[in-house]
Length: 460
Length: 110
Image 1 (cartoon, chains in turn green, yellow):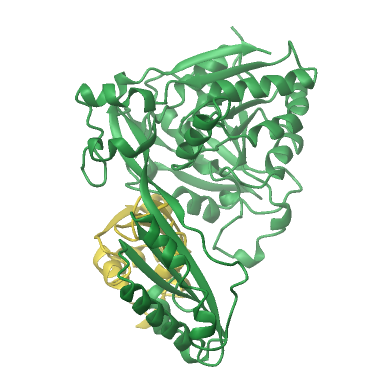
Image 2 (cartoon, helix red, strand yellow; image 1 turned 60 degrees about the vertical axis):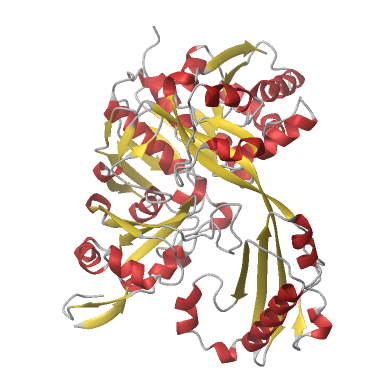
């Protein structure tokens, strides 16, 4: 058996699919790291990928992952860095295939193993599950999934760290997964490197906290940080966070030397509370982490130590994320200038709403915001601002409906206001807004034993 | 007593879970945390966001991080992709909460 490392370094390559393309490259070249972790999947991403796969069976994964691999594989192969990424979307096999082709082109044949994690995709099993009494009730509304069954576009169980561990134990250098939790992509390498046991709840919770800390990329290293934001240095060159973890579950967050941004207790705290529910019960497939036990300590410049994390046994359920077709929406905007910018925008809104009513168009929702006045802070902002002197206000009006023609007709009612509504209006260069299909999200729970993760490791 | 904005003694970050926005409110100094616990109750926050959210407010305490976590239910016009709001993901409820004013003893340095 190989000896266990004293510590391992796991670098976050991005905070979401669409994040800074330079970040993962800089993470593997800017200093020593052992793992690169890449989270690609948001709640609605899977439905877009299912659509792509339906059109072309060789698609359905995060295609951006392939040019990234082309750019960094020579470096990671040379340095022995391993990669965990849920870039596989709804087609991890095809994603692994595409990575293998790139690797062969880079003459890495025989030098690279790719792990593939599947078993999360429930779309083809839904009717069977429903027939066997698994109702997949909506966690927010309590309604059974049968309500929207005929409109379902994707359904995936959230897998945890263990299939990632299995792939790494099988010798994988690059682990490509479907819907594995963001935190599992960090916890998996820690379990693998340190030999943590499946019931070591405090350790699993610590690794989960490590994953949560870095899963949003630079949001814990100075990006989107409110504290002292004007003095956070060199965000143009921001360093993404890296976990330096020890076998006892303690870890430090740092970034490569010479990079911008800041790693402070205040900034890490902001990330810890981000998208938090009950902090004593952060539930993942692997454990229940208690965020009220976390201790933070500034260990030096741009280095924060995390310790004390307690955990409890995992539940017997897995979260399931279902996406279904909901309807249509469109948002139109116009900009009104001083004087009386806010009053003109308000008048335009009243005129537009009257025209929609006169056309007898039915919408589930019509929402007006005045950007520059109340779009972000609503009545709180209106109470505080000098509304009569605003230099400009953007009228932003959106509609949502099951009825596509109603939404289409709405999109034609914006531009006429330029010549037949209130004066001093501009900012319509983008043209008519387009009706957008709305895909909604249906969170549910499923008995864990109904989901069997599948792990393959293939040599390139 | 003096009247201050939470902006003077706290920072915050917010995000979404479905139609619920969460706001993590963090004391700028450990000694400000008891002020947050005492004054920034769930009921007070619900009043602050009157007209902006349709559901209840829940509060959780994280004394270890000198932070409170608020869940604002029904804050996002259906949430995620359904929402027509500019802030569909609840990203700036954080600073909206920092507008809240509280009365604290004049002896507390801010």
